[in-house]
Picture 1 (tube, rainbow, N blue to C red):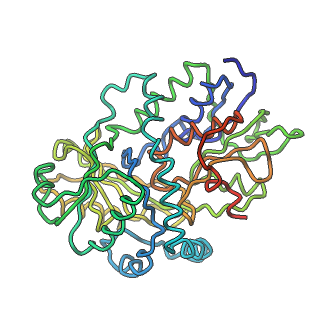
Picture 2: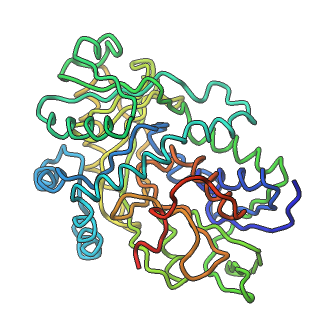
Length: 412
């Protein structure tokens, strides 16, 4: 199918690359821009989960009562960079307004709508590449102690209402699944259909190479400004300008710099996530295991046992927090014995909106500009389905989904 329209995409992470591939399937000529090599940011350092069950986000009725104790605990899932708090206040105010039951259920319903189709959308892209065992289908296991039972019961109930498949497991069943995990847990839930990446960066590079093989172009440039030639978007780097028929902004936590220039005030902010690796320890577990009380997890990967998690609000400029790294190491040692010294300390940025729904769809002010960002903890899982949806929107096709909840207009 030939389609002479030229599409520019800013951002060569999982959102940008998946969108590019689905747009190519419709015959568009696609150029990807990124200031770095593809997949060096959040698409490199994430937990590697494909988690189609994860429809209950952070905006929940019980979170506000838990936040003070989370912040006071050095081992808890949440931290603040205090120098960033004044900047976050408007975001937090909006977040609090999104934590009532109705808003929580609205988010869960519309996260579920896209999560439910997330794996089949990836399969369409994976069918075209040799994955070489980089995706494992061993499910994902969550464990918890009775201390966090009330929060877990809320999640289980909501997922039941949405029709999410979940298998509750007791202590003995957890031990049978993961005998190397110390028996600190009381209960858990097992998602047997979930998958995980053995190396997210390698998967992204394979998808990217397929994009290039199919005639896609990549330019390693920092796009600093967008203006318009009549209605056509013009992208400007320091020294060059490029004109396209349509433009997609998909640069994660960095998208706000561009949407601000398009006179659209989208309250995008950053949840900073960390990881460390324990080399040659990936054999200790057979699948990702998440310790729900503390908001972190371990994933067996090629680089070793990757320990990821915690949420830190601190923007894009603050340096890495050693205390968060220490927190991950101590948590990991609480879960499994015999870990060596850790390798790699990584900090990445999750793009989060106060209602915990992504922005997928056209810009409010410019009809040839589209957005796909703000996927918070689920950017990796939602890469393919977001790309598929946005490719249909750009091609003026019907998706048979209610896409209004993802529109940026909700913030105006």
